[in-house]
Image (cartoon, rainbow, N blue to C red):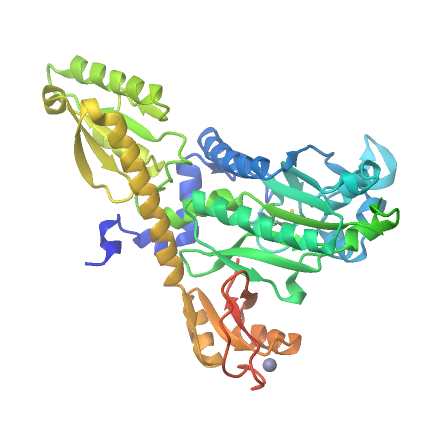
Length: 485
Ligand code: 5CA
Ligand code: ZN
């Protein structure tokens, strides 16, 4: 029997991921997308708590690696946004522009930040005098605004990106900036590992790098429909921004040099990622670390024993809470136990604890894990250890399942035709041999009606043998292609 059979079925999830996702966002009270501006949505209380837990994991990782949280203004004057030529070229048409204060036209237009390099750099310029002031490692978690022209989708492509975490760093040397890119990648790996999300890390082709970057490293995940979603990016900005903003510093031997910078960001997509990857036909399955409620206690009343099961349920909630487990007893008396099961399964609560009269008599509790709906019985005296062990096992299994999913959706192919067929069937990511020339890469995208994600980054270098699938010249690398969101 395959491992996959252990889990709740995923027919709706895999056949119609788009509507599965839309349904779950609303019915599990994550994000209400009915706000009357396209690309803008409302984080609802339950979704907000998931968001908070996930962002806290990110904050902890950044704080532990010497990043400092800051808060910059939302408006950027046009002349600052325009300082770096590539940057403005790419973002000009994507900005919301503030042109009036009341009815008075403003002297300069202000952009609602589409990202914050051009807000942060002029201030860093004022803060950095000498090498002793470097490195600077800042981050903020804010809303950014992009007038996206591609089809907007709840959380996945917003025009107000309300959970944008952007890190910006400035360094004395090219080597330090390079090392910072690697640290950024490591931080994101640990972050996605923590939230049970599997990913590919690729160096984007030159024509798809961030506007103003030397190069871009991207994290991608495979969605249930076989399309790929970019869930984070790390950019080496070289001296493009530091020269444009004249950030120089005094070296130990008294010369002045331009600094080097990097930036890296994630968005609400990283909050959607575990919801998407681990969903099933009953709803969400949340990794315990992310779940607002880790254990829901549900009394199963029988005639004459109602008070007893409710009492024991309340006590169980208290016991769990006092050991730091996020627990809630669902004591609503207008719902049947079955209706409560359904309600909390949809919301992805990792563990359900059932208390019936038999459990009370035997001083036991029945625990049901959300991903497999497997039941176990544990002694009330051991319940804290049982729950902790179950959450750990579940986290491990969820992580493994996510990686199995990814592995089964990345295929190495020998020919363009094979790649084209797989992509047409939306089978995930294909890996092809490439000579490395832009010309061939662009032809590949055209022939496959797909995007190149780029070349594997940070993996063991395996020498490639064979020929470029386009020009037949000796291949220099493997390149990944996919139909993307
Ligand atoms: N300044 C850099 C680093 S913070 C930057 O803006 N990079 S970015 O444009 O690549 O954005 C970072 C991440 O935000 C992307 O990898 C993507 O996962 C996410 N993102 C970008 N645009 C949107 C959008 N419209 N809706 C949701 N997420 C988005
Ligand atoms: Zn070629």
